[in-house]
Image 1 (cartoon, rainbow, N blue to C red):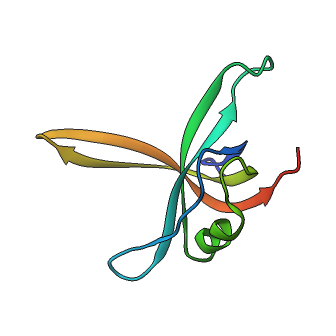
Image 2 (cartoon, rainbow, N blue to C red; image 1 turned 180 degrees about the vertical axis):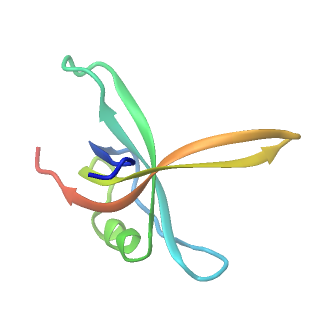
Length: 101
């Protein structure tokens, strides 16, 4: 197993839409609502990003409230806003599976 490995089960918060980068590469950003506790009262909202064929396949099946298992890795990034460095973390999707739970 890789050191940077993420496996999540959750529900899409909105329909997936694919965009194109300036270089013409396909990508999508979306949020997965993941259950945190056994009582079903606490959730985490995890930012995810997918590229190329995976992004396009997700768009075909990814409507709001669709349940997925996502496998990928964590990726951090940063940018400057108002002279402050802002950090973000997303799961880069390497594969996915539709769930019928």
